[in-house]
Image (tube, rainbow, N blue to C red):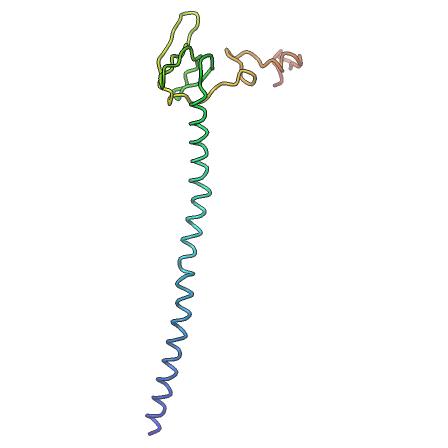
Length: 141
C-alpha cells in the first residue's frame, strides 16, 4: 500500500513539475526568437537603411545634372555636360579637339563642385588668395 501511495505522490509531483515546465518553456520560447529579432533590427540599421539613403542621394544627384555641370562618369571620365536629351547626356571631354561622348544619365558618378575642385586641376581660389606656399612653391592646401 505504501508503494501505491508513494507512486501517487510521485505522479502528482511529476504532473505539477510538467505544468511548471510548460509555463517556463512558453516564456523561453519567446526568448528564443529575441536574438533573431535583434539581428534583423541590426541588419536594417547597419546595412539596409544606409544603402537606401545612398541610393536616394544618387537619384537626387542624377535629377539635378544639367548643361554646364562638370561631372565624373562611373568609368572615371571627366567632362562638361553640353546637352541634355531626356536620359541621354552629351559630355564634352576635350574642348580643344571638340570631343564629345554620349552617355546615359545613370552613368554619372558625381558632380564636381567648382569651388572645391576647379576644372583642369588648377589650385582652388582660396589657396591662391592666401598665398601660402611651402619650400617647393606648392600650396599648403
